[in-house]
Every structure is written in C-alpha cells, then in structure tokens.
Amino acid sequence: MTPAVVAHRGASGYRPEHTLEGYRMAIRMGADDIELDLVPTKDGVLVARHESEISSTTDVADHPEFADRETTRTIDGLTTTGWFVEDFTLAELKMLTARERLAGLRPESAAYDGACGIPSFNEVLAMVGAESVLGGRSIGVMAELKHAAYFDSIGLPLDEMLLFDLGRHDLDHPRSRVTVMSFEPTILRRLAHRTRVAIVQLLEAADQRPADLVAADDPRTYADLCTREGLAWVDEYADGIGAHKSLVLPRDDRGAISAPSTLVRDAHRMWLTVHVWTLRRENRFLPINLRGEGLAGAAGDLAAEAQAFLDAGVDGLITDHPDIVLDVLRDADVLRTGRAGSQTV
Image (cartoon, rainbow, N blue to C red):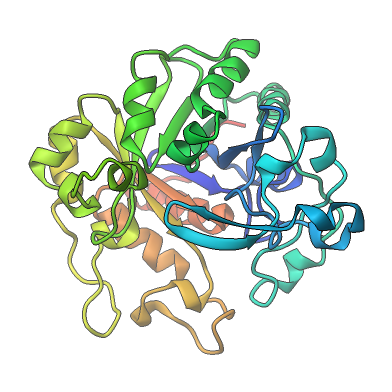
C-alpha cells in the first residue's frame, strides 16, 4: 500500500511508547513500518527511548536504588534534571518499566503503565523479524538516532552501535527495509559512506536549527535545508526527508491548515521521498479547523488531516494512530479502483 503508514513509537496512541507491546500492536493493525528512537546505555547498547532523560516514560523515580543517579545535564542546548539512559547499564534499565508520557490525554494507554519493559534495538529487530514471518509480509523499521553529536562528545558514538546491531541481524543491505534517520546531518553524512540502508534527513519546524550545526557554528536552519539548494545538499547523502507537518501544510494565523508548500514537489524533483510527522487524533495536535468537540484529549478529525497530506503527495505518514490512517488509505483505494483494497498479511 502506498503511501506508507508508519507507526510512531509503535501504536503509541494506545500503548506506552517504545515498547515491544506497542510495536507489535501497530504491526498487527497493519502498519507498513514502525518508527523508533535510539539512545545508548552506559555499556554501549542501543535502546528504544525518545530521549536520553527517562523520568517521564519509566518508573525510574520509584526505584530508591537509583536515587543518586538523578542529575542535571545540558543536551542540545536544553538543560534538564532527571535520570539519563547513558548513566545506566542495559541490565539496570531492564529493572524499569515503561509509562505513558501523555497520561492526561491517553488514560487508556496509561492503564498499561508498569506492564511493559524497555527494549533494546536488538530485541526490536528480533521481534520485527518474527512478526514478518508470522504475518507473511516484510515490516519496515525507521530508526532515529537521537542527540548524536552529544553522544559523540561523551564517547558513545551511535553509528558504531547501530552498525553492530544491523550486522548481527544481517540487515545492512538495501533490501532490509531498515531506514536510519536523524535531525543531525553530520551523523547521516558519516553513515552514508558506511551503510547500505536508506537514510532520511529529519526536518524540524522552519525556524529551528540542527544541534550539530549549532555546535559547529553553522547558521543554517531547517528552513534553509528546505530550499532547493538545501535539498540538493541533503540529496548528497540521504534518500529522503522526514518533515514536520508544518513544512508541508503550513497553518494560517488562526491555526488552520492552508495550501501545501512546494516542499513535496521540490523534494520529488530530486528523487527524495517525503514522510511527514506526527499525525495524532487528539485535538491538541490537530489544526483548529479539524478539531472536534471537547477538551485537548478529545478526538478530532485525524482522517481529514491524513487525507490532506495524501492530497499533498507525501510518500509516508508517521502516526500515533496507524489504524485510523490505514482506514483512510483503504477508503482512498476503494474510490480510486472501485474495489476494496487490501494489504498483504
């Protein structure tokens, strides 16, 4: 099915993010790919967490044996107090359980707090391999490397760990359906010479800057990378871009989505694929013209937002609610062909 539906941190609208249970649920919903974020442990193992600090997504604060690990650290210009993955071994992290980050918005997911552990990248790849065999279809993995320049600075290079895990699963080849992503061009340019898997440059909101470029006194913003010159530079090392929603469908002064930008067209002219992130059903995350009745956690019209991005020509939709987006694609297939579309399972 095209475009691809990518489960953001698993089926994270229904289960705590970055858990094997959430990834597995997304796969069984029919997602084409799962997306995960990778950070390293003290002993050099990649694990699935959205960021280095883990107090909001695990029960680490409830473990008195780790109380002395709480610290304050500045990463990518942001100062945070909490517990950080790089201060724990994998064995220690296995003593923790996952929690729902957005408990106020997603109480059904928060009901699973304490039921799921923290998986390593190795475990995720093994699970995806098993689910691919069980389901009779190949499932993609889109792996984002987080805070790469920071981890380089403390002697934990993410690319070395990534290549090790890909190698142990025989996945370092173009047919593996593994994609490596980062907001930082430096590590992606480095990996372009060392791996054969697909590479995607992630793009934040237009006024923000990649952390590695900030550290190198490079003044370019993500808006600069979206220009034709910027995309030509990205094309030197990447196969696609993963764009913040606002870069493809800007919002007007009211907060409603307006006409598409030229980003998809410009990227496609260079044969770069375009994924957009992150599609979520809650009002809080939707443009004002697609919000439903109720508070921030109430469901809005995610299907309409997904359709708007399909109309804009994107190649992939990264979403917390893959089931809803898959229904939109199936309905579009029915309209296009006059018959019910189906995904190989």
